Length: 268
Length: 184
Image (tube, rainbow over all chains, first blue to last red; front, side, top):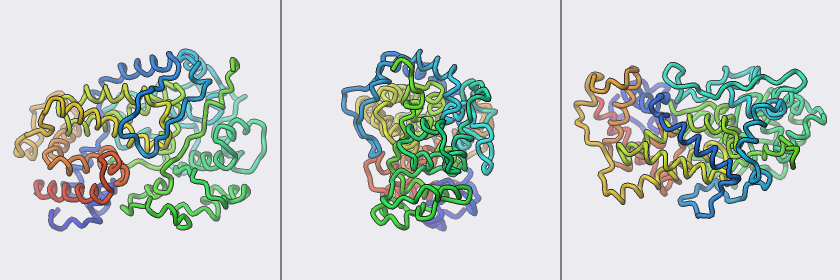
């Protein structure tokens, strides 16, 4: 590739990971730089995991020291009180043993390698296609969690039920965790279809619930994922054309649902 | 490449949320995704001390994890900012030259056999690629690494660097042109 002939647009595409139409040594170099992680790059894993366990065993590891360079998406807020009293051991037991965990929202199932049958559209989960090639990395995810017995609905089932507009008592924890039905719907839509981009910058005229029943075919009418109707967010677009990135451009401060509520701990 | 499908982003965002509540498995997955990226970026800043700085950064990340709010994209930017600040402190303290000074011929030649630890073919390619990028002027190297290796968009990379998105784009663009020129 001729160095003088790289347009800004082409450079932006390559930087965004879209090398289509830009074959050449430069593309190869960038691909090599971003190749899957290697085992030796995870040499410190167990030390970090030990620190993680220790931090959570002591309750909330919230520091009183101010953070430097806090990212814009970061807001200081205390961990829910219930978590601060909780030991890491208790979590381990709960996570590995509780059927509810797998059935509730699918997070653990994701951690263990994907929600079974979760996604009819996209390929099976590869945790990090860009940084993890199976032959070169260690296990991508911890030991799989044993699938939940039939008594507990899968995250997929719950989410589909929710998206289909069904009203079930079983859905309540999911809705509560998501911070409301609409947010739960958006989260489920993202998880079920694999389209990502969980909207949380909720417009005042958020589409009515039944619009979600057409979730297989796209986002509800009135919700413009490209942000066209979101003049106040125009600056979030940086226009580099990375496929899929536009989803995030309008979603800078996604606040995840408080999944702790799902567990409904008995000692509470 | 550094690009992820949206599904991965959504899943990793959920994993960050679970990790914040003490879920070890989720945290491990997040670590396994992010650590190699951080390490490669840090090597451009602190060379052989990258692993130590990465470890320090992770302790900081673990400590402040519960108070983080955002998506995985935001988390990457946040974690990278922590790592970068650690690295810059380290550089100031040691007054160390941040960049490697490997001769170009060594890098652009046929894959050498000097690094037998990296037996995998693309491992060697990765080393070469990273060293070439590290030879760029630092603002260009950082911009390229943040965009390509860490997968940050220009705006988030700008937040990490304390620059405007446009400045990051320009630096990365110049870096790419320079790399392309050297590869000819």
